[in-house]
Image 1: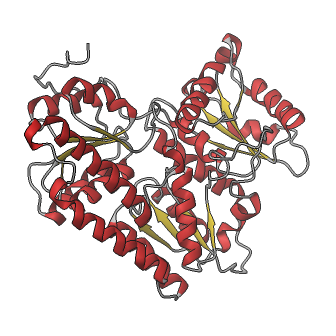
Image 2: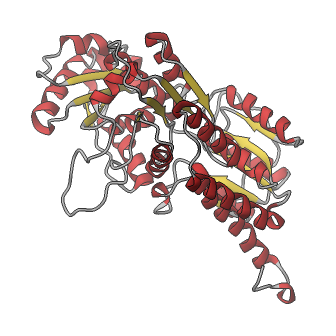
Length: 454
């Protein structure tokens, strides 16, 4: 079954096979989980909420809480106003969150539910809040849902008091809790007062205590979100994922922002650290410089095994761009780069990378699918695949090593606890990629060429 993908490529415009993305509400739910004592709410059917929760739980191996408007045939015909009002009352009465973040589904979007007007008619308990974001499933991807929900929180909650709080707001992009912990470690080392929004660390990687906590200790607090307008600067990580909330903050409160790539690899992490150094007016501490030096040493040592090896990289746009630049720093060639998110900015950024490193013969495509990537590989194979679990079938069919990185990874454990960002994350990536290539060399070489010391 896995090797039946035809080699002949036909241009498709209306059909995606094995899409390299999931729907907007998944991203919106993940963003809402990064807010302290927030209950994400899916305005649609129970099946939608079950899918969104399951998708996140399978990646993080943690429960992803969410309530639902529980649409039936009646709501689908007459609108979901009554359902969501009852749901919000029940959720506050039973689960007692501080805030409910409603995201729409394709069903509620199609019937034209005006969730804003529903919220204005709700009887919301004192001290509690309800926000919403429009996240139709049939356009965009989970990346759009993620930044749309961020914009929802900003639209409803943020304020500007006129008294600067001296903090730098950090929009981390769609990354794992382990990445967020690493970013916070670097911010602390740089002595930069900050607010990270959203922050899923200590929520989606909370420790086992023997007692279930519906609202774990982590997450950006409501007070921190309200005070984003008083921040002196925003560092927006992920040129595609974080630009819209950063632009919204600039438009609403004139908070300036610096848009950076996800700090994956040497150059992107250098940009992040340099920006923090300028904002905090502090020198880079020896601990960070030492880790950078270790990473450079690792890249030099492993270079004989990575030089001019080709890679096919797929997944979320900012993650793919970061992984591709790190491959280029390792001397590799990112021959194919695809994302399922329909943002042409991805292609422009990829072409800029190819030009920066002087590589030719590479292909990048947004709004693409894994079926087409498989066809490209059938016509011209690569040495390694780097991406999510959905490339597993291609890896097996074409007998290519797969390095799992990005979202979602459904068939492995621990990954979401360990960073890909920063110099430490790059060391981990270098280990994963180099070892995959060395394992392949061991497997394929003649018996007399098998080396214990490599």
